[in-house]
Image (cartoon, rainbow, N blue to C red; front, side, top):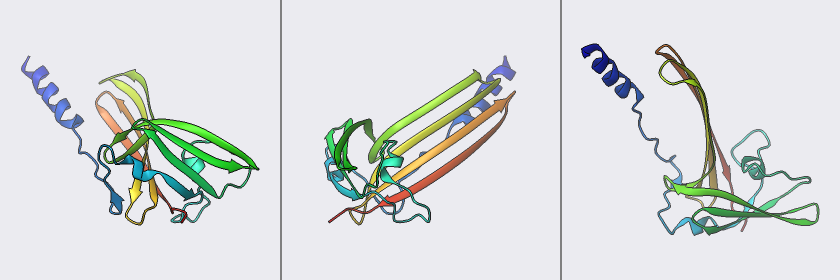
Length: 167
């Protein structure tokens, strides 16, 4: 029984993690302040050497070149995204929630296996934050974990893209 309780305490300690804070340039939005995200933003990221689109990060398909994307928060759980695509006006609703000072959306967790013995876990999160310079930042985090009889390995890929507000 002593070995089981010791093993249980070790597993609890190993499972604990720290909460990640906001990036340096982020503005923490409290309840009722998500409306500050409303506005028109450029579709191309300003901090990337590759062509990264805001619509691609929001997982919204489009056909032609889109320059501006309008974001409007309908309530605390729905973000309306509208843009002109090839002369047609497109609108989509993204479901999410306010979390850690931003709008969290497209969160997926996939499990496979038997916990504590062997398993694979893939977790993807996307969070939209306000920037100090009135732009927005989309942080994406993809965490892959695997365990085989108490031997575990975790890899994490974090990306951050900045989009300027159109004035």
